Image (cartoon, rainbow, N blue to C red; front, side, top):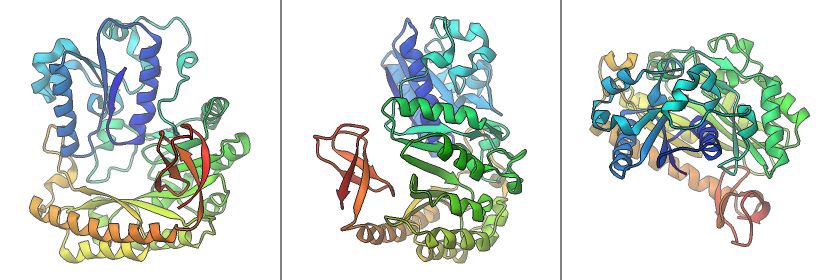
Length: 411
C-alpha cells in the first residue's frame, strides 16, 4: 500500500485510518493514497506535481483531506474538476475520499462502490487497529470558528467540534495495549477543546481533558501539538508539569508584532505571548524545555520594523524551532481575506526575510542543542537508526534497538 502524507498531524491521523481500511478490504486497482495540504499555494503545487506523476504511472489515485473538502463536507466531483481542471483527463483514475472512512455511513455505500472496495461486514472500529506511525496521533478536535484573515481552515474543515473525552481515552488505551509508548494530541486548535465556539477561550476544558487522560491511561509519553496562546491559563501550567507530558510545545504564534496580529485577526496580543512564554520558561523540567512556533513571513503590510519585532521575539523567548510560512494569498482556486489587503509583500522580500529568520532560528537552535549536551535523555526509537528525545531532538541510535522502544541516551 503506497501513500504520501503532506504536512500536518491531522493528515497523519486520518491517513492511518484509510490505510487500515484499504488493508482490510479488497480493491481491484493499484491504489495510491494522497493526503493533501492547502496551507499555501506552494503546498498545492507540490501535491499536484506528485499526483500527476503517480497517475502517469497508472496508479488509481485516492485523494483525501483539505483538497477534497469544503466546510467539512466532501466536495462534488464536478466542483473538484472545476477547481483542478488539469486532472480531467485522469478522471477515471481518481477517487475523492472523505477525511475518514468512519464517515462512510454519511457517504453511503455508493461511494464505497465507486472506490471499488467491498462494503465492511463488521463495525469500522474493529478494523481500526494498526498504527502506521511510531507515535499515535490522536485528534481531539477539528475545525475552527476564528476566521483569521490568512487562513483557509474554516473554508476547508468547517466549524470547531470536539471529540468526547471517553472516546479519546479509549483510543489511547487501544494503542497502549499494543506496543504504543507515545501519543500526540492534535487538531486545528486543540486548546479550544469543548468550547462552544473556538472564539471563546474562557470556555476551554483542555486542561480537564489532559487530567482525564493522565488519570485514565498509563501511556508514558504524552506530546501536545499546536497551541493557541490565549487559551493557556494557570491551571494548564500546573497540569503540564506531570512528567508524562513531554517538555516540548508547539505554539501557533504567527507574529510578534501587535499591528500584524491585528491585521491577521488573531485574538491575542504580544503581551499575551510574553506572559505565556515566560510561564513556559519558568517550568522546572528534567531536560531543557523545547518551544516551537509557526511564523508567517511577509503578511500584507508587514514593515521592516514589524518583521524585526518577530525576530526579536524569537531570540528573546528562545524559540528553538520555527516553521516559517511566507504569506500565501491563495491565488490557486481559493482565496483568503488578507489577499485583498493593501501593501502586498513581493516574493523577493519574502524570500529575503525567510532567509534572515531561518538564520536567527538556526542560531537559537544551535544554542538549544548545546544546552542539551551531557544530559541523559529518554528517546523513542522511530526507525532503525534514529529517534526523538522527549524535548524533540532527533538523535542517532544503535541499530540493535527496535522501533517503539524507549532508551536512555546522553547527547
